[in-house]
Every structure is written in structure tokens, then in C-alpha cells.
Length: 232
Image (cartoon, rainbow, N blue to C red):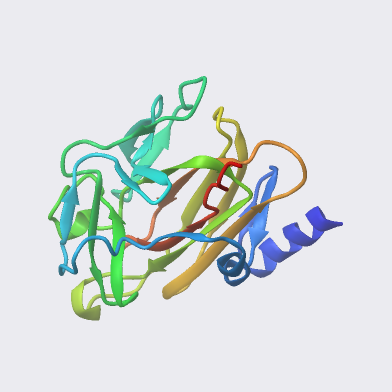
């Protein structure tokens, strides 16, 4: 019954899900349930293009990079990153992108705070690279749930240029690289809150891979996770 409800909820939200052990969850509920958040506020505010990050970064219980070791990155027909291949075993390891094609952090007008921009093939500081890359997140501990906020339809600076819709693709992985779920979202203009929760017994969520085809690229903020419980 729960799986059927999750599948129906995905349709109502305009989201298609493949078979897996993770289902769509309400981000606002997860925000209350989970005590960890990555918000990129450790860096001072800086207008776009912001800070260039040429290698994976560690923040508050998770590594953030471009992909997982064993995967390959290339550019698709829309100029966005696409990821192929399976992560090398036996455990997930984070990998960064090429110089100026990894990540950046900048002050984002839509969020009103710092946000993460995955950099595409054009490279930092080109506007056409902003938000068109891939993001991989590797949590220190297996997660029962996770989520993030994403800004889309950000086609040009200062709100100029036509808005056009793309997709946001999210894959959730176990620590050994097993795929737990894959979701294809088609959000509207502005900020969308996305959440995922593990259903039933089995391995927790260790990794998350985020791709997109949004014409203006995406920005990511407020990644939710559960902090490790203290021993003893």
C-alpha cells in the first residue's frame, strides 16, 4: 500500500520513478525529521560567478563533487553534463570534475542566500557553465532520507531571456553503488523542494547524483540529512 501511494504521489507531483527502495517524501516533513543541513553559508556572500571550487569539498557530514569514482562525464546535446558508467567498488568514492568544470558557490537572488552551482563544459566563470554540470553527494553515514531545494528556469542574469523547462534527474545509491531509486522531475519556475525516503529494510542512502537539462542551469541549496548519532 505504501509503495502504491508513493507511486501515485510521484504522478501527482509530475515525477516519474523507476523501481527502487526509495520513494518521494515531503521536503517540509524531512526538514523537521532530519537534523543536518548543508547550506553553503560558510563562504562569504559573493555575486555570480562566485567562488570556483576545482575539487570535491567537504561540508557538515558529506563530500560533494561531480560524480563517483568509476563514472565518466561527457556533454550531451543540450550542453549539459551527462554521467555514464557504474561506480567502482567496493564502496562509493567521490570524484571531482576537470579544472573549472566542477562546482561553484555564489550568492543566489532566488534563494536569498549562497547556493551551489554545478559547472558545465563551458567552465568557470562562463555564464553558460552555471548550473549545467553534475553534482554527486556522498554522505558519511547511510541515510534514511534526504532532500534538497533546487532553483530552475534561471535562464539569464537579471531575469532576462525566455524561460524554458528542463528536467532534474536524481539517482539515489547505496554504499556499494547499488541503485536504490531514480527520479525524473520537471519542476516549474523558481524553487522546488525535493525529498526522498527509504522504504522498508535494506541499505540506506549513501550517495546522490543530480543531473539536469534546465536551459539556464540549476542551483542547489539546503541539502537535508541525518547527523550521526553519538556513540555510547
